[in-house]
Image (tube, rainbow, N blue to C red):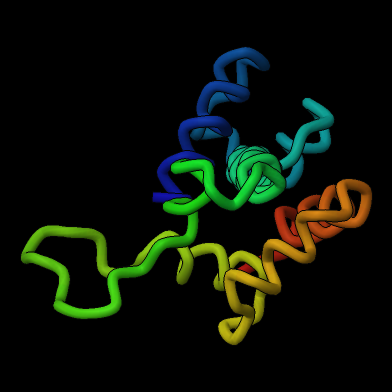
Length: 126
């Protein structure tokens, strides 16, 4: 999915700059010319910023309760996403062992969370 998002963005940049695929201009050059980054970095940053906003809400708010909820039993049905949102956030943060309570503590400090979000959004994860 990330490759599709990035390729769509770079194809749009190529159209705006009138660069054809035949010209064989690498994506890094396209990003330099447009002074942008891969679009998926913006998506990750927005996701982490929203998660921080939700985690700073009171714990009895429904959205705060279910932001990192993982069912304690059962398996996912066929066709469902293989990972939970908590697993996805742990992958984004680069540490599979971070707990929801630790995430809440990190999100409580707005400035620190913003710095972490920018750093983790820019990190390459493949």
